[in-house]
Amino acid sequence: MLPLAHVGHYLWVLYLLPILFVIAGIIKTTLSEKRRKEDAPPGGGTGEGPRTDQPDRPQDPPP
Amino acid sequence: MSMLPFAHALAARQDLPVPAWLFAWGASIVLIVSFFALAAGWRKPRFEDAHWRPLGAGLSRLLLGRPVQALCGAIGVFLLGVAVYAGLRGTEAPDRNFALTFLFVTAWLGFPVFSALLGDVFRPFNPWRAVGRLAGAGFRAIAGQRPAHLAYPRALGRWPAAIGLLAVVWLEVVYGSSGGVAVGLDPETAATAALFYSAYTLAMMALFGVEEWCERGEIFSVYFGMFGQLGWFGAEDGRLGRRRPLSAATRWATLPGSAAVVIASIATTSFDGASEGAFKGAIESCFDWFVDRGIGLTASLRLTDTIFMALCFAGVALVYMLGVRGMRTVRGAPSLQTLRAGFAHTLIPIALAYLVAHYFSLFVFQEQAQFTYLLSDPLGTASTDLFGTASGGIDFTILSANAIWYVQVGALLAGHVLALTLAHDRALVYWPNYRDASRSQYWMLAVMVAFTCFGLYLLSVSNG
Image (cartoon, rainbow over the protein chains, first blue to last red):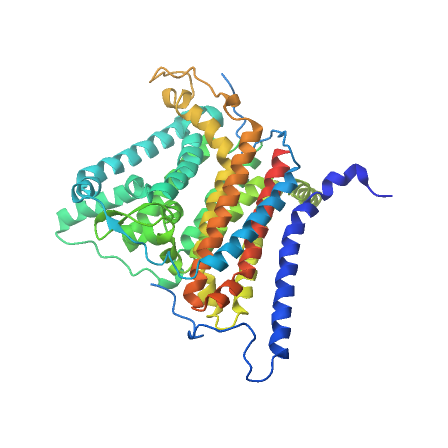
């Protein structure tokens, strides 16, 4: 038996779903990027297209 | 005359065309679309340079000059004095006493909103800064030299202000609401706390210097000044100028403890909203648990509320740290510490949004009282009618429940889109390759969606 009389108590799930969708999307994108990098031939780049030739080293925080 | 229940959340049911949870879905979609729009079209940092342009020299001289500053300071001292006097000598009824509405509604909620628009407007009106500066000038005149101060411990940063912010809200929301009455802090306690705080602040100013303490430890300067970083106007090198809105915020969080200040702001607002709605059941269970173990009713309530407030702080900090840790996984990321401090300012619009969303209706209703009967009869004893408005009241029909809801949703949405924009802008500083910068913001998008949905859930429960 579903506790339908108390269904209002579970409304928070509907507020949680968008967060879960976004997190699922992030995980899926991250995994597919990782897989693409692994599948790429050695020295063949990342498969992301040309990168602007910028340093990867992080900058110091702005003053 | 209408009596105002001094509750924070509005307890009115809306008549919405769609279920409230659909607003959370809609807001999430807006945030996701904003994220992709930023990723596609915003490829260079635009907020790092404030584009500060001086206003007319005459206007600057007038507004920042000694006479106007002294006048503003005197107004601040006078109003604090009225609030303290009303608290000590006025009626015990919180809704009839000038002190509570002035301190916890007009000042506490009004300054953030006006600061976010105009810049740091609290600074000239800060009563403790005015007294401190006056004392310093007096010392110089008598001793013929500047007062010597201790070096402020750098590691402390803004932590005194962060802890103080929690303490102020704790006093109002936890201590005030558990004293046996359901209408908030009693005015005498508020006035006594204001006196203690004044003594503490002036002592700290004497130790570390007025401006140093205002920048780091004075709760209200730090808290209102934080929102002032979003505003259009600011002073640089003694001159008033116009700047790009939001841009000053990019340099705000460089001091230790700044992230804690903004997290405390979001957490305390969340707790205040949730304690009357979403957390009510859990709070009651925890309260019963303490009572069953023989702890007194008032102590149990205060203990429970304190625990839940601390949990809110930990929860908000955890969500933010998850976003920061997510960014750390992107190649070329700076250190965790750099990221944690570097993105703290992006939470300021969220703190403002939470404040507007949770207190908008209270502010609109209670300001009617402030500028009618509380102004004419500050003590609430029906003994004065200074401006002939003592018989005024609050018109609760000025806002419909639906109008309040739409303002709440709009504020939350706007705040989170601005936060997302600030975060994207900062990411472009740390990751010069805009693709990496956008990738780093996946997790901040999750943080923004989480805060939006959580905020809307709190509002829907407390409004429903």
